[in-house]
Length: 278
Ligand SMILES: Nc1ncnc2c1ncn2[C@@H]1O[C@H](COP(=O)(O)OP(=O)(O)OP(=O)(O)O)[C@@H](O)[C@H]1O
Image 1 (cartoon, rainbow, N blue to C red):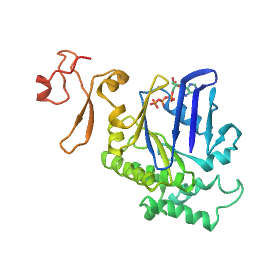
Image 2: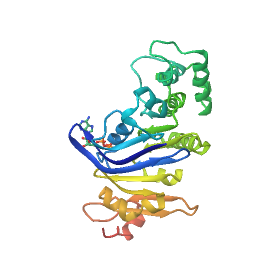
Image 3: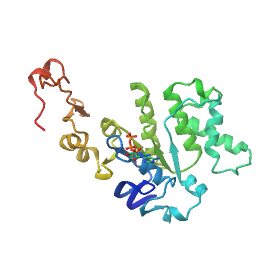
Image 4: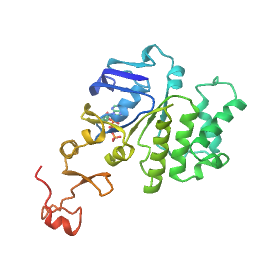
């Protein structure tokens, strides 16, 4: 669906990342992980056609992105930003209708069909009852879901999500991730999302792309990519990856007491379990 080959990305002449190759297909969820500043947002903006690659090529549906109009890119790729409170009150349905912009003329009013599509997007995410609510009064989790509905209304098969669970509480994180997994499982969307939580990649059984200092270190299933040694190298803190009794994987950094060198992660057990030498 979208293929990037040997991208060098950056801002103006400043290179942020290089040698970046990836492709995203329908039915896939990809978690893009990497430390602050490694280039995730810059990569997203490049895939969205908002900034040109310095070198390399991006193809959407086999066509070079450089040859596509903004509208055509928006029909193929939708961006889901982190949900913020807008300065003006909007109804949820109006916010979702904004996703139709690439489909209707700039001066045209949304049709009854556009409204149906907006309502269907809300229904697909299980929030049809919010259609007439004031968007600015929703909870963070609900607002994030509305941002995803807006992208669905855009009817673009590829969804690029910028930290969709950032600032959400534990329950809302799980709800949003469940909906994302449902979308990909249905097979009509591919999703690439950035996250700072490696556990989410395990929970989603997602493909993981791990970035570090502007390069892709690894691309594959979480159990292959998110090893303790690789996470330790990338994040610069000792990390363990363990399996719970139910089989879930959990990544945990050792929190070290600088005065004693003891791990604080597991309270009393940390006193006896020294962090691994790394
Ligand atoms: N508009 C810009 N102009 C110039 N440099 C920028 C711009 N936006 C980001 N950068 C720089 O590009 C580098 C990569 O930033 P980017 O936002 O892509 O990282 P990130 O991986 O998304 O970080 P985070 O996890 O903190 O969101 C950083 O050094 C940043 O300072």
